[in-house]
Image (cartoon, rainbow, N blue to C red; front, side, top):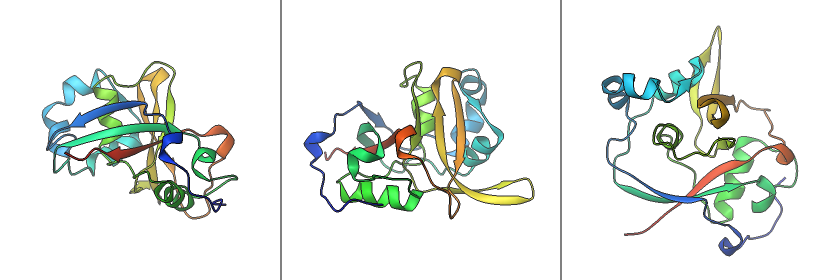
Length: 171
């Protein structure tokens, strides 16, 4: 459940600040650079399907990144992806561009040992004969980009999850 409180942004510590340029991470980027990124990032089949659906960044973005546990922005119990995204926005955060997770791994912006879910609008994928909506999961010990299903009824345990959210820096 979302606790009824407004979190002050001062409570959040910026993990890092990055700039993503126009066109970054569109499917054509991966097609043109497949050799260089496949040596750096292991994509699960589901994450590969998700990456194939990325359109690319349409404007230059400077982003402050925040790695947070849901309790830090008002989630006090197991919650759905919609509840987590809503609480994050109510706390002043923004959902991540879908292209951010591959960017962070390819550019080596994630330290060894860090793992986190990406607070983004989920992407529809097929899993065998079924389908689901998923978010990216960055698993840095293995340099792997994975997915986590966010289908209706799927909940995330506050105690065990770390989420990535952003705030866009204004020019």
